[in-house]
Image 1 (cartoon, rainbow over the protein chains, first blue to last red):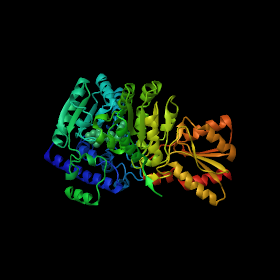
Image 2: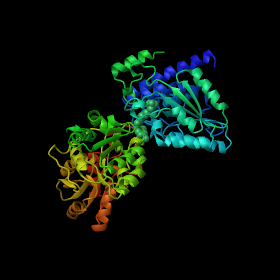
Image 3: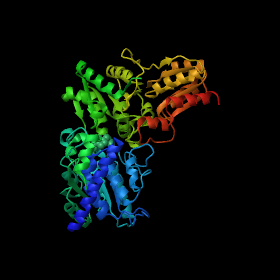
Image 4: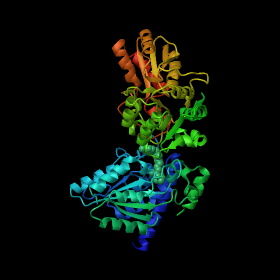
Length: 273
Length: 310
Ligand SMILES: Cc1ncc(C[n+]2csc(CCOP(=O)(O)OP(=O)(O)O)c2C)c(N)n1
Ligand SMILES: [Mg+2]
């Protein structure tokens, strides 16, 4: 990936970070931490990698992305608005009663969302089903799923991993947002799910580990994943929860809490274009 | 009117109980700050088990703890505690008849902004159907305190449904929850309004409005959904001749169904069920959602009026 492209993606991600903070601040509700940790991966996938048309989304021309850690809607909605699925102005109505932008992604409400998530663990198996179905239909397009590291504590995650490994869904690439935090604290203290990479290896997956904020590393990992033809791929993305806003970084309190007026101001200054 | 969240009552009472009874243990699934089990966790770290985001494992582990003499309280949001882990609740807890207390918060529309995925509108239906399980929906902060104490003392599985939002207080600290007993909070002769949970306060306000229109409503707090106090329900309707039910739940399977079953078998009478009808919830502020789903005091008064005088 050339430097110009990296620059372009960085600027986009920065804009999305502002929108994430803005949405959660305006709604006074929502999940900033896990949105900021995954926005670089999402920016890369939506604006460099995937075929993700707004119209004519048939399985032969459209890649799919499942936000299994559904609470990161601010990140997802910022990307979908930029893609043109709905006007950017809708972002300011996030989580309000008459908005299409539900607190968690619902395919019946939000254009560009294929499956409903928010109950942790349920996005990943739906992505496996999509990968199986697309392969069966002869589609060459890819399926991506985004998992939280806390989410990996759900048994369902490992049932999905087992089945994807078993059925060798090479058209499926999963990112684990390994930010080390969940709601009650550090993942390793609440319920140690580590080592996540080894668990995927044991389930017959192709495993890579990267810095989830480095566009070159993300790009290389996706290129490598697509070369694997007999296994599903997982990219363990080491990230910082709250990345980009100093007081939110590595602070579990900003998992699901909005910034106040003062914090909002500081955040927007730090993320200025 | 004073407003307090029932989940706060849970956290406080659990902490008191922890001091009184060393057999009480608590499990949570990464929501201890929200369910308020964090108060217990801080004081009794050895008797608190954060199971991580693994509700099925939490409920089944609780059954194991109960088997060796502990009194486990297991908590999460209502949708995950009863939905995700339903079959574990059925097999390990209820079929096994274990002394497990499932106290779930964030039930109903008043979850607010998190939206449909987090708003349990079906939990009473899926718990009420389980043999051995006692199902309690406290009306407010004070009834919650007393119901939690009851659950700790009672031998057998109990499900208690709590809310996220601060809602009007109906009782005071002297109130005592009575098992299997529906409470008549206001006597009346024209219509019996049965309510549970946060709808009890709305029903009481509706009664005041109805009085102005010359309708004398009897308000009954049905906090124990199972076993149901059919005697109180029937007595009231034998007097008033008709019934309205109000719940922050789907009208299928919850309070409305329970009252309908009781009336049609014993004393058929006109019935109007209020609740969520063939819908999921959605995002929005709790108060706005109650308005949008026609579950405010004003709605209860209006619908009762047109039910009585079509
Ligand atoms: C089945 C289920 N249980 C509990 C929750 C509540 N919840 C929402 S986010 C979250 C923590 C998620 O942590 P992680 O997966 O690490 O996400 P991230 O750190 O990326 O935000 C929990 C417990 C849920 N949404 N679904
Ligand atoms: Mg995490």
